[in-house]
Image (cartoon, rainbow, N blue to C red; front, side):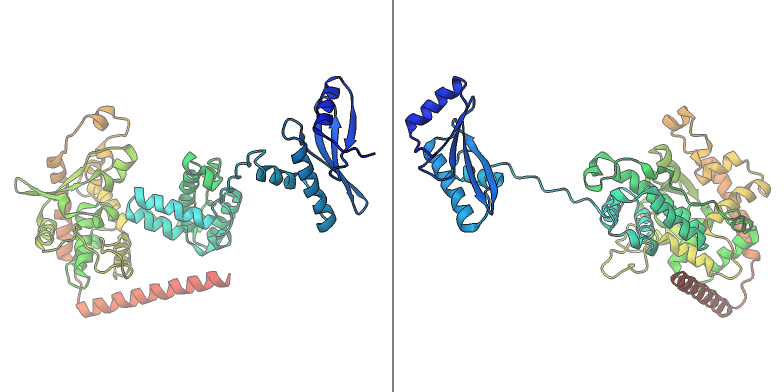
Length: 469
């Protein structure tokens, strides 16, 4: 039977609880309110809803007294009778917070949105653009935007497995683009390594360098039989290349860049990224000081040493002519036009040199084949030891990477040694150039156009075939 509670009966309940007594008292002053007497006396609410019992502990007597308990019980009963809703722990918490009996719970932190492949790629490319050369950024951007990666654009990178990417790489390999597949794997591995670093783990969810083992399938024997990557252009072909570059059939900036590439046998990216400030006159000799940032060897070994090459003859005259030209561009080979409207004008793209050589009749060599030409003809024709040729090719300045004295202390530039090698190479090239016969230049231009159209048609056909597949 219900009993109307008072402050005195509440004090008695506290004393009874300390004495070890156990009993419940229903309060006639607030339907549903119950005082539970025991070692830890507490207020409770009891009722039924559609025949289902409702039991809810409201709080201990140390938290609030009879007046508040009745107020809470009345609110709970109103909820049951008027809204036909059973009060819950969540409802009770809101009631206690609104009465300032307890502090509100701190807001739960919003879940961190994990990157999808598309978002992770954008973040990674931004880091590449900040820390690496523009050519590297453009290359990674192109490879990581291949259409074969579209199916995983919206997939969280944390859920992408090595097997997922290996399947994509293998599909490209099966389509006949074996080098493309290898290059994609080479771009995905550093991206995942960056995503797994501490600074990115929270957003990426990638917890380990799982992609370090990502590889393209082995190349087919058909690829090996083509001899790609081993071609040594004959001296006569290099002479023809220089003759075409000097004939006026190419854009002047491309022609001059080709001349610097052939006469010095430097990497194409090093050539196109040459700055006007990199060329200085020293005692009547024009010296090309290639900064460490543009040296593949220096980046690999962490060297801060420039690679210095003395220039002479026609190539030196060409560089001096370009240095005299009035321009605000810092580049020796300024881009003819920006790649897109609104882009800043940079230097000639390295691919422009590759494309130019590919469209020239009678020229099989790629830009990198020119370096192979110096290595081979330098030894076989000019009798120059390979170790000396490395001084020009920038292969660790002709020394192994474990030479501590050379790597850490030597500042020798070896300009005289390099001058002898480059003069001998220039003499061989000049003789071959003089012996080259180009014929009618209009016929040459027509042949170049035909080759370009043929290659462009072949490229379109390959793209169409891949879409069908």
